Image (cartoon, rainbow, N blue to C red; front, top):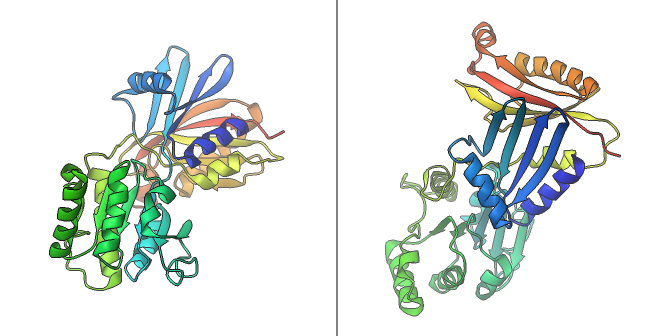
Length: 341
């Protein structure tokens, strides 16, 4: 499994979606990888799982065989163009919400990692080069919070030259926004794209302070991510810490646990994963508590037998006894992942 996970991570780190296909049958477990840059294979996989995917995961049963298709999406990029006082809470909240944040500004005193410790990357360059340096992608989220009309226009012009991201928001008064849009519509002849611009940026919550404005911006981004026309319930963002652990050299074998179905209020969603070693070391989580403890014990037996199984986990009684909020049921797939050489 190590090598196929490393290949999966390579695709994700390059900004490409990829699907891990695991087939379970008499011959054990056979795994393969399909990437979105293979159009024919990707389309065939889409057709096969159409309508059945939950959070990017599809479990297909045919006779004695079972196939698990997990479609993974790269961690969403949040590109913050401008490093002023609004950019700091946007970067901080964005990182906490699972975005890979890049901050871009043309001033060394603003574009530095000391000012933005949560950012995956901080770039200091002219706004004229923003398209070449960032290479905007369809699944990106872009926040334009520069210090003036001219810099706003340079950023938007770069966006109009390439792929239009899932979310583009620009700070400023309605007058400032109207001026920039009017100028660019005349220059580029792309008024339709500009109509998709979220400006003024953020949900109207009466925000005043930089922190409140940052919150309103992230709330609007999450709304676009979860409810927008371009959003997709079929997207799954992997637990990168767990995936990187699976792809590393290890001296000890591990069992991999995946939630493949859930009903009611469960602590983790479909697609959540956890690894368990023979000594009981865990990486990741499927929710904690008594239910997880029971799954860990089963996982150690599966690991010993080098097998796989489906396990039903009913947390209804446990939740009632312990006063827990979550109390639904879930089905987990437990499988032995081979040890590293």
